[in-house]
Amino acid sequence: MAGRREQADGDSGTTSRLSRRGFFTGAAGGLAAGGLAGVGGTLAAGAVEGPGSSGQQSNSDLTYSFYGSGPQAGVRTPPQQYCVFMTFDLQIETARELQVLLATWSGAIDRLMSGKAIGSVEPSRSSAVPTDTGEAQELGPNGLTVTLGLGPGVFDKRFDLAAMKPALLADLPSLPSDQLRAELTGGDISLQACADHPQVAYHAIRDLARMARESVHTRWTVMGFGKASAGAGQKTPRNLLGFKDGTRNITEKSDYDDFVWLGKDAGWMAGGTYQIARKIQMNIEIWDADHIGDQQDVFGRTKHVGAPLTGKHEFDTPDFAKKKADGDPVIPATSHIALAAHENNDGIKILRRPYNYTDGISRFGQLDAGLLFMVYTNDPDNFSRLQRKLGASDRLNEYIGHIGSAVFAVPPAVKSGHYLAEELFG
Image (cartoon, rainbow, N blue to C red; front, top):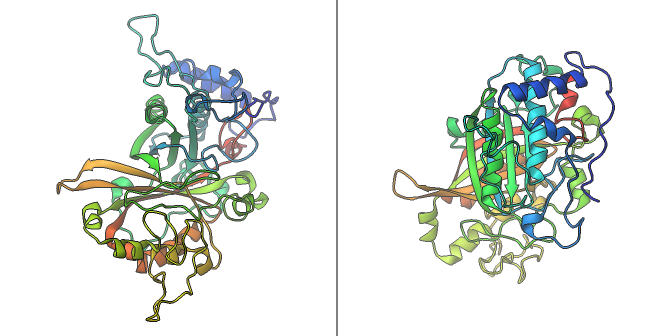
């Protein structure tokens, strides 16, 4: 069974601050004290099935396992239809409190990904407050994944964890395309919930934020829909500009090993990765007034088929050297695909996992929408190098603005009986 839970390991010694046994006892106590009863029990919950592990499944029945020995779910997992992304500022002061938060969330995420409530939706006492908000009841797990990231602030002097800071974790440098808003930038911790039902993803983030409201403050969030990049075997979706995006995304294991996963030299982060989140606003009304020839030159692809301008089919390899009769390249050198192509960037590739978003209507009466651009990479500088190039000369810049940004270290998954980033405290 793909999602079989492993037996909890025995205690592997004590940490400098708190033994694992003592920690879980403390966590359970904290849950009870904080009105979060039910979450502690998840540490000994039953089996979870992986996709296809029980034969034919509908999307509503699809589950992914939270526990494992590789990367966290939600990175290589085939992109689901919806995403809710939220970052948080920590309001706690000690490493022990951080341990309790990470373990509490780990137990809750396990239950949520199993399609279970994290607490009582309808307490027996009328005076009791429900410990699960209940809006995902009877909807099924819908392939939910919740992926946790740690921002640079986790490793400041508050928690005495500077020595454990991942080597490449740092705020991104200023980039040419940045129009960043402080209220849409940064965060100590990120949670990315993806599912094939929007309410399931929303419920997960809502309840994780609610159960930790004494420990964190929400910083910024984006609700994404209509995945805008494909995984292996998936049909390429479209962004809100109407073009297929992510046709040349990473799908092969060798590329994941070379460009996404951190190796053994990363220490406790081995098997993890870095997450970059960018909120990209689109000037949709201006784009919609542009003629199709220019739109296709901006992307370097045809709009209907998604073929490079030098080809006929979507997956044809772009020929960036091919010239028109007037000597200009068929695919403009300042087109999006020409500037982003690995052939033109020393072979650099990044894993893209973006979603479209809409925030309704802006104060100017225009559509407020765009792209939640999620990137996974084993070197955040790879993204910065690409974005410096795109931000400087991409013709698409006339129609977009990068208004939100953050970077996080995504620890590897953990085995049953453990919690995310537990190695930080050992």
